[in-house]
Length: 186
Image (tube, rainbow, N blue to C red):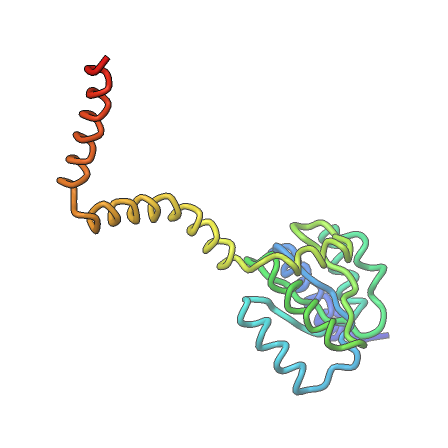
């Protein structure tokens, strides 16, 4: 039977994991088998850059934390080596980075994941991984907003390059006179 001190430490770990799961918008559970130290260091660096917390966890501790927060379905995949990647702000970062790594390394595999407190399938994790980053999406939206303004500015610049407003007004007057001339001839 474990000592009281060990039990308290395990309870604290479960509480910490439960709080982490509750405060995360997304999370991915992986089998990190077959990863070497250099690759693990590089993977952790990429995850940190996306504000993703990545830790190796014991299956029983993660299972109890999942029960506590209501993530039913994650317990089924908690076998073998397990690591948990969570993010409090980025929905796609962990899925994107870990999916790319899993494609390069055969033994490394994604087991499951969750999004906003709901367990999601591996297909949804693949779809998340294919989404562009938040910055790319914002750049696309900004580009869409700027397109009409940029077109207007190019049009104004073309008028200025052609000879200015006076030429445009003169062209308009000539066009009006040309329309009136055939009407007078009749």
